[in-house]
Amino acid sequence: MSEEAVQHEAAEGQEQATVEKVEPEGKTFSEAYVKQLREEAAGYRVRLKEIEDSEKSELQKAQEAAESAQRELAATRTEAARLRIAAKHGIGEDHLDFLTGSDEEELEAKAVKLAALIKTPTDEEPPRKGAWAPFDPDEGKSPDGGGMSIAEQFAAAFDQ
Image (cartoon, rainbow, N blue to C red; front, top):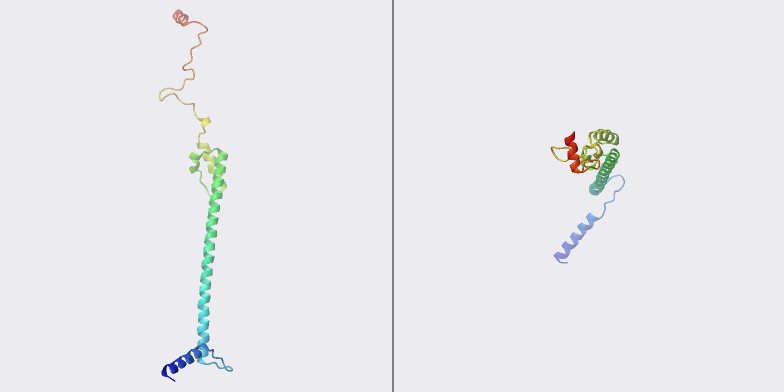
């Protein structure tokens, strides 16, 4: 045989020795068998750790998504309650920012106070004509002279 063939057979023999499991005989175990079992167990521990980490990550992702959805639901419910209570007390959109609270009871109490502070359009004074004069509802109407002409009214004013 050539040297290459001998080296090749020797290499194959070593590979077979490492691939083949060493079986224990009785209650004594060879050092190679114990080493092989330890390496195998270490591989399984590493694989188990990887699986636990991947499952843990998925679990954490699911928990975070659930928490986010719960926060969003709570915010939506609070906003719906705020809008419903504002409509009940006649609080318009321009004052809605002042109605704050964490639950319906708090919102209700603040809505009562806020509604008392806000004047509704029906509570306001009639619009004024200008900055210096009040509104005169009879302005622009002709005075009721009782059917007299303007000349008769003028004469009546001097007779008095």
